[in-house]
Amino acid sequence: MDTMEILNGIFREVFDDESLVIKRETNADDIDDWDSLSHLNLVIAVEMKFGIKFALGELQALKNVGDMADLIEKKSKK
Image 1 (cartoon, rainbow, N blue to C red):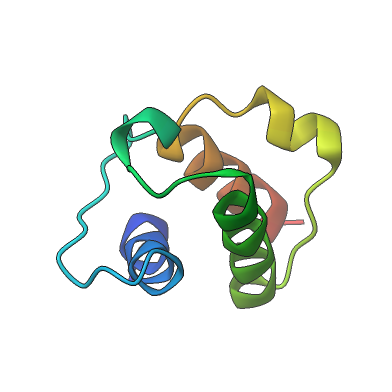
Image 2 (cartoon, rainbow, N blue to C red):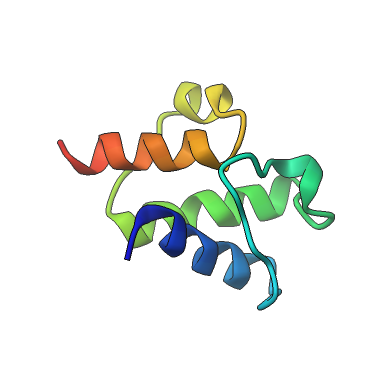
């Protein structure tokens, strides 16, 4: 399973929407329920699933799901 597939599963759980399909270009504007609390829940779920920790500066630099996937892959290889 690739990073985007795993992320899609996490997004479906966090946003409680089994029909949700994310793309690399997906961002907070594309998902109605994506607010600060769901963002925090999303970050925690991603960190737990991949066994990584994000720095605040890294999170602020992310523009979309593709950026997040790239960062996860980069951090997972260390």
